[in-house]
Image (tube, rainbow, N blue to C red):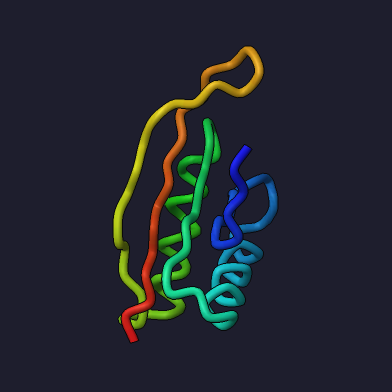
Length: 88
């Protein structure tokens, strides 16, 4: 499995944790990060990006969105990857 250090995989934790993780990544020097949600957590990934945009305003924008499916064990899960980019 390929691991990216600029990837935030949304899980069962509070949305604010993922927002804070994204802010930390931007502060560490990443200009672009990916928020990924699988299955029933897709909507939570979207909510995370919207909360991040509400918090940081015009300093970030959605760069690209990738949707698809992937095999996880015997299951096939839908996923969304939302790439956000710092604009300053």
